[in-house]
Length: 73
Image (cartoon, helix red, strand yellow):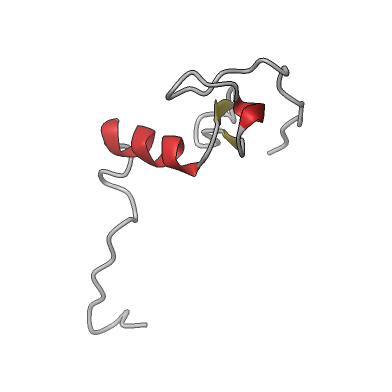
């Protein structure tokens, strides 16, 4: 799987709050389970975290681990 890395536009807006990403600490996210589509940009981790929570993007994923006797560590 290969992707091309491109620098976003200087005026790229945060997918959550709409602020210019380069005015903050930008984060680029791609969904590589779906052919590494277009990147989504967030201005910081707080916006990314809130976006994930509000869209229930962790539901059904490995965010909760319950070890059993065979897989304890």
